Amino acid sequence: MPLSMLLGILILMLILSAFFSGSETALMTINRYRLRHLVKLKHLGAMKAHQLLQRPDRLIGLILLCNNFVNTFAASIATVIAIRLYPQEESNIAIAAGILTIIMLIFSEVTPKTLAAIKPELLAFPSALIYTPLLKLFYPIVWFVNLFVSILLRLVGVDIKKSHHDSLNKEELKSIITEAESLMPIRYQKMLLGILDLESATVEDIMTPRHEIVGIDLEETIENIVKQIKTSPHTRMAVYKKSIDRVIGFLHLRKVLLEVDHEDFDKQTIINLLSKPAFIPDSTPVHTQMLRFKNEKIRIGLVVDEYGDVQGLVTLDDLLQEIVGELITDENTAAREQSDGSYLVDANTTVRELNRLMQWSLPTEGPKTLNGLIIELMETIPESGTRFNLHDYPVEIIKRDKNAVKLVRFLVSK
Image 1: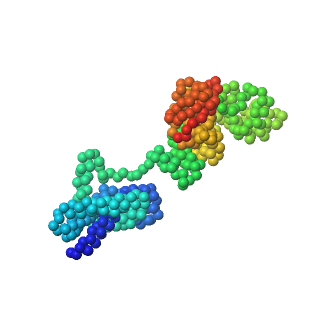
Image 2: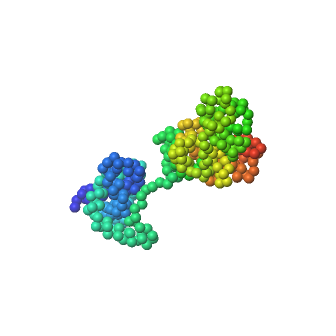
Image 3: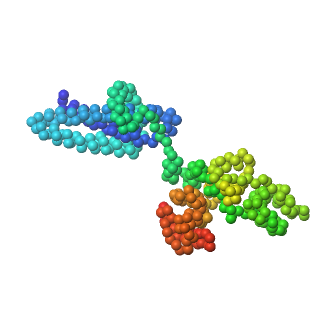
């Protein structure tokens, strides 16, 4: 065989080796979710690649069979060429092997694998069209090789016949959404993150605390009650006697405002307009309560603990805000960025809301508010100016009163 033909065969083997090496990396690293999307669009290459990846053991066996064959054949051709050129120098065979190793490393391994890792679809789809008939052609050999592979893997407790579908847990999906800044506005990211958190959120996490509930005390004078009704920013208010624990109903202000200027308006008129109060256990999941609000056609309820004591108030708007966030409220008021990169945060902000706003990871299993989290950690109400690490987040107490922290500065944004 002419030397030129031997060189041509060697170059062909190097090209085939590059193809097998690159296509292996491309098929193994291709984005499985984009691949499934392209399969739904009836992309031929994607359909073939998806089919091959259902049994990766067979695909890898085929690729390695072909790759090892061309690499071994290339080494044999290089040996023949070395003997042809220098028949009296056996040491030149080793030199030829070394040169071939470097050439294959650069042109048949590193370069195609790097290209495949950067642009997997460029090689994955064309190679899938080639591997599909090749797998049928060499199936007996691939099956025989994989038979021994499966036996060896079973010895270490791995069964390759069991299908392992790619899936994401909630935290992984949240990471993907967080990193998709270039694909969607931040407000939509927060909305999706809020939806993912619905399953673990309870009404206790989002309720208005007991001490912040604005209601009508029927023990007050009718003049004070009328004034409160006319100036209230709320559309619905709890009506009680002396204590919120003695609530008797909810008052829709739109209904009472039609009656409030009548001469015969009195407390009994208010009572007649009340709707029955709804009581919600504090451990009720947010998504469950949304369904209850929908089915019972109510928009507000009182959150109670296991003893029946009122802990707070939750509305349908609160539940929707857990999903849509700043689309209906200005959430930026909870954490205000300063010129030095720090953040001023209202200590009454819930930990869940703060995590969603700032993409932090403060613990949510214990106290529900930032104030509660600080007090739990410090086991006291820290003085203004106190600095410490709140679960690896450096903070400074800016303002406090007798029984609570009011304003906190996060010194470093994580």
